[in-house]
Length: 392
Image (cartoon, rainbow, N blue to C red):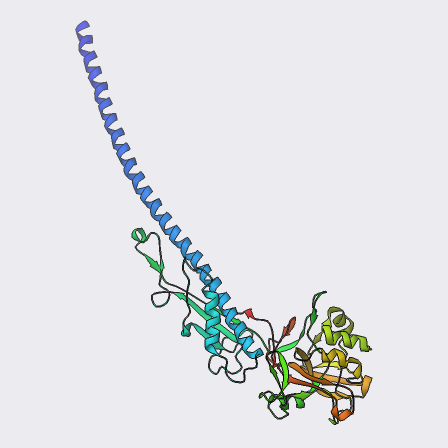
């Protein structure tokens, strides 16, 4: 029995030793597999991080490119408006618009560099609300589209940080932005309590207005270096003061406010524009109806009571209502307003003989604050613009 026990014990020891050796081998195999798996996961994380960082960088630069294109388009459109205000008679100066766009674009960093616009990147055309930019003739243009790029042809592709890992070392980017100023004005919103509309409460008949625009009236004045001087400039004039027009209502002041506007009310509106309270007192929106018309009451006409106020406006621009018909006389007159147009006041004389009295105006592009845009395009305004806005 002792012999048997002595035989069994060594065998038992050998058995445990064998199992221990076998268990240690499996542990080392698991450790090696974990190291390989950890390495692979680390490489995957590094790759994903690299891709994420490059994608994030691309998004940031895309936003910078968008910001720069938006600003450049608005700058170009404001330059277009400035050209109109300075009285261009032909097509706008495209080089001036390009220079204005570049002046702004080159102030905005795009991926740690500055993008430059070339001639083909800036387009000038006509834009109507809800439509598309129409290119072709530059006459009557009201919009500027800018295409800002970072690619192989312009400004260079955007270099990425981890091209060696992702297999893509650069990225091509391009954005477009369009800014426009609308001319289809059918009325005005209420201005703020401390603001006013630059409206002159004196109406002009449509026939006389069209004659001035078409060059069928007189051309005796010009606006030169900030002053009104004698001499022709190619921009024809109209007289707001009625002289033998045959209009029974007497071309003259209109009530944009209460029905019984006093001379003091008219003087204030001439000097400071139409106020929020004036529009509230009007009792109805200052905008055209579905037929494209607005009825305004008339006063007795333009009088010497506001001559001094009008004289202070010489050289300045204002918006006036244009009427197609007038019914009644004096305070009982009703004017059918069909347009809002911009003018520059050139000369005022309201004393002396009737045939020598005058309030001479010249069609002039004017910026209209608080303007209501007619999105149907049925309202017509050739000399009034809304402020520049981004449309695309």
